[in-house]
Image 1 (cartoon, rainbow, N blue to C red):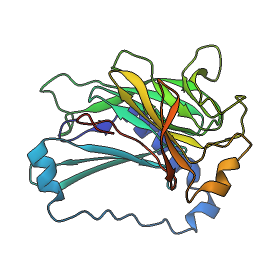
Image 2 (cartoon, rainbow, N blue to C red):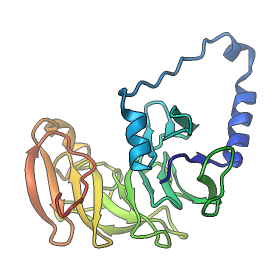
Image 3 (cartoon, rainbow, N blue to C red):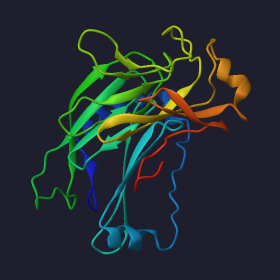
Image 4 (cartoon, one colour):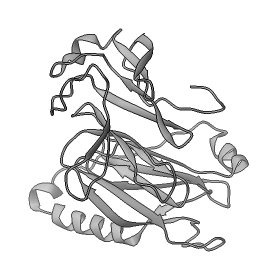
Length: 248
């Protein structure tokens, strides 16, 4: 992405509605938590030098953040609230987001060189797929026109969106004998290579409901999707593998 990006006013209206519904007598008596974002001293200069912005999610507070830099050299911070946001993927024009029970697709509505209140990206929600609560984690798309592949953690598989069901499975570890809503191995991370799912991470190679919970310290694995082979093990809760510069 370029220096600054925001989500569209459609989400603003949703946020305003949420705030209106929260103004009950009970809610007004509660002190709202304060928000503070701290960055290293050279962080904004680095963003400007690299001519980029960063997007990340935090499911603990239900936020998606977009960080960029203003023309005056200050940090630009934009955030929106979603239910349990997790995986993010973007090529700067399309943005996919996995949440508690939906997969959202946003599209940048600004043309090259166009801006909106100083922002050079305006991500408009165009559609979403209802998945139900499947604990979706990492999400990746081969390109802006392709459907995403996401980690379906609850069912221990990789999946894509479907118009006929909550999801369409595309791969599962060979040690998973049944696709059941049992989070058997806590499959969580995914990276692509040559526009195809390439490597995944899981907390353990277990095949019983919540079996991974007893192996958090040393049961973690990395798997090659194409060969379905474990290529690294003995890890502590590995997440989010990335393929970059011909390295995993």
